[in-house]
Length: 185
Image (cartoon, rainbow, N blue to C red; front, side):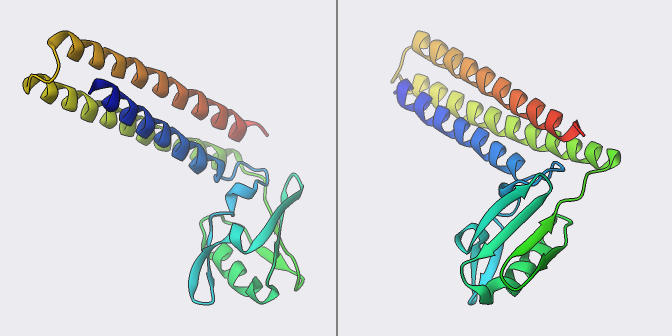
């Protein structure tokens, strides 16, 4: 009983951390990164399609992204999707390849980005804590229904707390790494 609750909580907590990592990878840190654009939704023949399913995305230089669509007729739609996004970049194309020059971040821009990073990190921590609360509630209700003993209940809640602490530290490490990445010029 407790093992199932633990496995479910651990799985959900890890997904929260993975989601945070993915979100932070897509944030512009002054360097070109394919993760910035690969999840952009492009209107492809009337269907919203992720950019990474329509084109090859390369980083030939530190501040340059190139997007080479497999279907040349989709270049206009890809450009529109990039312009609509909150990346703040201007794509240019030569009919075959779209180039995106990534401008260097200003000091003020870096500080604003760090605030956003910390906010996303806090949201992830709140998500992890909510999962902990739900797991603890399930354990308490199992104890009330006499499915588990009081000792098992206490041990289960302690194990969930240890797991929560471990994953919150993991989030802190991820945030610190991204913050350092953003603040280095």
